[in-house]
Amino acid sequence: MAVINCPRCKKKISDKTKKCSHCGLSLQAMDRDKIANVNNVSRINQAQRLMTYSFVAMLLFCGGFLFMFWDTIEQGTWQYNLAMTSTVIGFILYIIIRIRLLFFKRNK
Ligand SMILES: [Zn+2]
Image 1 (cartoon, rainbow, N blue to C red):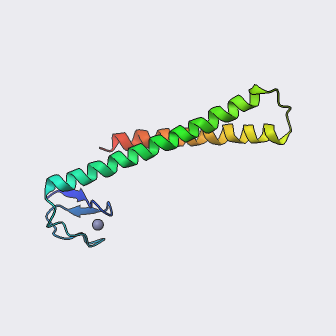
Image 2 (image 1 turned 60 degrees about the vertical axis):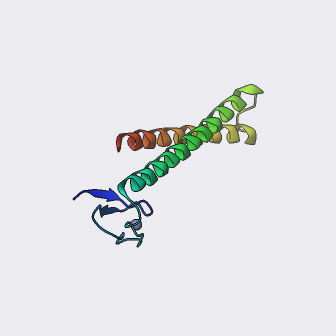
């Protein structure tokens, strides 16, 4: 008996079970290949979403960073604060997403 992830709710279930005990999805109609396929697709979607987030975070970081040095904005103005905030948030988000992606790829 092996433990698989339910294709719908992602909770751990037995591969011998006919119905997911968590969300009630019928697994009888799905053969192993189909389940693996659904799992793969949702993994790819999730990875893609993370990549999109990291791209947005990167833009935020670069945008803020460039903006800070583009026109010599004086410190203390709201433009400077905005650029600073954007850079910091973008940087932190980027790191978090990168770490999540790292763990995501490791948990195959
Ligand atoms: Zn389920």
